[in-house]
Image 1: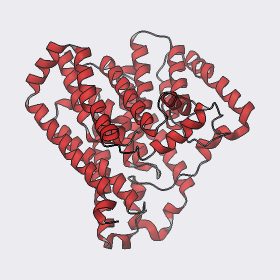
Image 2: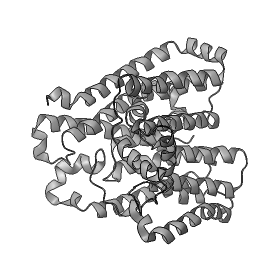
Image 3: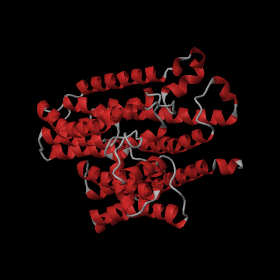
Image 4: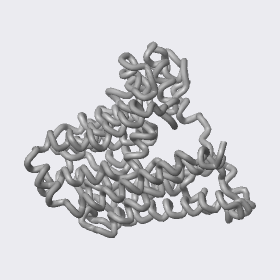
Length: 415
C-alpha cells in the first residue's frame, strides 16, 4: 500500500473541509441574497432544501453512487443493531458501550435495509431532527437569519465529516438537552423535564449523566425532577438486572484506551518518563472530579440564568472541560457542542470567532483519521523526531488550542 492509499481518507477529509470553508465564505458574501431566497421559500421548504443539499445528497453520492462502505464506529453500531433487531438483550447477549436503548433505536432501519449505510443515514436524519429542534428553540431575530445560521452549521467541517462520513451519534445528547429547554419554554412541569433527561440517559451515553445534577440545582421542584428520572430509569434498570445480572455495568467497566486530543496527549511527550499517564483509571477519576468541580462552580456562578440560557452554557463547559481533562477524549467530541455553540450564543456576529471556528474544526476533522493511521500513538518526546508524529502532534496542538478558545469564550459569556 502506497502512502497516498494509506492516507487517502485523511487527504479527502482535508479537501472536503477546505471546500466547506470556501463555501461558507461565499455564503457570507452573498448572505442577503440567500436570506431573500429563504424568505421567499419559507422555513419548511428552505430547511428541506438545505438538508437535501448538505446532508442527503452527499450521502447519495458517497454511499450510493460511489458505493463506499460506512466506516469508523458505524460498523460497530451495525453489529450491535443486528443483535438488537433479533431482540437479544443488550450487555448480556452482545457488547455495547452505549445506553440500553441505543442499539434498539439503531436497529429500526435494519428492518428496511440491513446495511451499515442505513445506520449512517439514520444518524444524518436524527442530526437534522435535532437541528430543526434547535432552530425552533433558539431562533435568531428573523426566520431568514435562523436559516442562514442553519446553512453555516451544515457547512461546519466537524458536523459534516463526523456525521456524513463518520456516522457519529454524539449530537443525540444535545438533542435531549435542547428538548429540555423546548419543554421548559412551554411551561412543562419538572416531572416532564426529569422524564426527558431520564430518556436521554437511557438513549445516548453515560456522559449525559453529567448534566443531571447540574440541572437538578436549577429546577424548582427537585422531587418531581428526580421522580421523572426514576419513572423511566428504574423499570429499565430493574429489567436489565433481572434478565442480565450486573451486565448493565458494561459501559462503565470497559477499559478506555488513551486517545487524542486532550491535555494528557498534549503534555505526554514532556511527562512520559514519570509514568503519570500509565494509570488510566486514576486519570479518568481525576478528570471526572475536575469536570464536576468546574461545572458546579459555573452552575453556582450562573444562578441568575434561566434554563434556556443555562443549558447551552453549562453544556459547552461540561464537554469542553471533558475534552481537556479526560484521557479518553478525542477530537470527534467537538460534534457534541458545535450546534449549541453556533445557535445559542451571539458569537455568530463575531467574524474572528467564525473564522477560527472553521479553522479549528477543519483541523479536528483531519487529526483523528491521521492519528489512527499512524498507529494511535500516545506520543513520547523521542517520537517527535519522526515527521509523521511531529505533524500529528502539531494537529493536536491546534485542536487543543481551539477547545480552550471555545471554552474560554463561553465561560466569559454572561449571555
